Length: 431
Image (cartoon, rainbow, N blue to C red; front, top):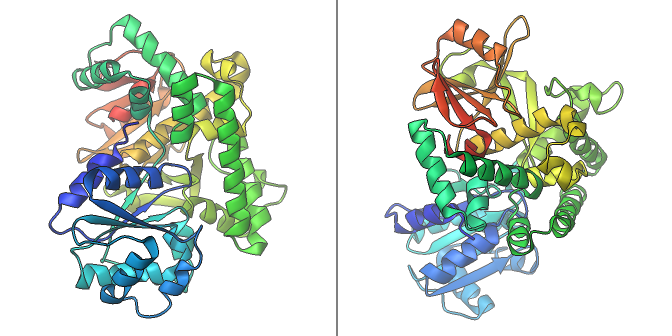
């Protein structure tokens, strides 16, 4: 299956100023497979080291971690010669060996001709520990997310449809009705399957939602295991409670996160470490409220007002035990949840495309789902789960701030009217 990360990896390999690369992301998003496939096709050989499955590797890094000492040892361990420029060295689950992470600094300074990629599933959690020494300025960093809807459609062989969607997005020209309906169907399938590569591969091969759900349940179980295995003992229960409650809060009309809904009387001081662990692990992400619409938006975020979204739509469906049929046909029984689910979908694609999104609220309660900086301009993004695109809050925002244009995501076809760019939900990847 095509992954967009492959383009980045090729550019990294060709960069004359390349540094050791740290590729981070939540578990099961395809880091190891993508990198090993890259190594298999672009290098003579791959020297692969996994610090989770081979804990004894830690001993190798307990002494001198200079490249001249490490390279012969690593060559011996993997049973193959590590050659400059021609061998890809891969450190998997690098967060489990602090010294291995630190060694990247010395590879950058003393032996930049060696190509090294370090993978970390819980890297943010590990680096947040006080004892951890991070090679600041000595590494390139990239985050790998689950597959987006474009990659999903490409995995299903819909190259032509993806091309037409991109074309219509740029020209604000409606997609032919038959293609629009087909793309909306793929969008709803994506809400069920999500972007975990194993789930997408299973669905592409079998079209069986039950088999996909089995994989999703196992990934959720692995996340729970991580919460127990790599978390402070006092925080395990709180982290699980917070994670369970996030999907509940997405069902609320006001999706702003409220600690008091985790349990009666809960306060921020009790659960903020749990939320931070989930965020650093890549399992969830926060969207803060922007108190003022000025550049840079980062300067005007309200740290006490935020929404939380999960990293994958398929895992969200599995966590809520949603039936595939209810999502595919947008059953009325999901009315309370549709808004939060679609917001989650759009936030994922905005994050995936490198945006730091915020939300906006007026003094009188008007709310715009997302505000982003796009092309040097601050652009509001309104999200609707169906084709009803009346957006009173968006009008309030536009009257107050006069943006160059606004983006409206819904089930409606492409178009542009009154400075509002209408984008169908399946084209969120184009923004």
